[in-house]
Length: 260
Image (tube, rainbow, N blue to C red; front, side, top):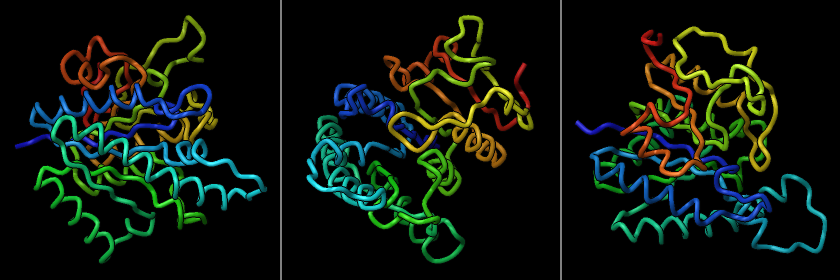
């Protein structure tokens, strides 16, 4: 039976310091996802980056409020982002399909069943789902907190074996990441409280941060799914997490109490 992994790629992984899309990094991650599929692993990709793409595509000569900016830049950027994924995955003969969703689609009912059925038939036909929030209409309190929350809901909906949250940091540290004495917490058993190590701060280009990743990881862990937080800017990180996890810095939330 195939293993199923949900991979969330954050905005800070896909953008350079100047805010432009890092196509080189994006290409490297696509290479690794193609490798995962060759290992008989099903992959669902939750990708940030649409708003960043759109912001770099357009020069607006008048002021826009935050909602207008999000709607405009995401509408333009989503086309560019998925187009790039299409071209990159096509090099490996991999078909991709876009799934734009909203928080209300995860409430029990017909929309939930339809979304799950759509993604199931995509996987059954060897199509890689690329999921993102429908930012053009999700502009109220019904928005996801961020794509960490979205990826967690997708992992639970699709009964994934593992959720991998890729950020620009190696994992959760027992102190400030910039402090040389701080160490990564490698394994988190169910019920472990790490809140003392988590700061509520947003990422540079996205809505999330380590606090949202910790919140998502804890909830998904409780549903019986393994969660890994790792650095998407590290070379070959996805391959190493599968083949040589001991050599790939990360924090792993185990659904059962097997941590030392």
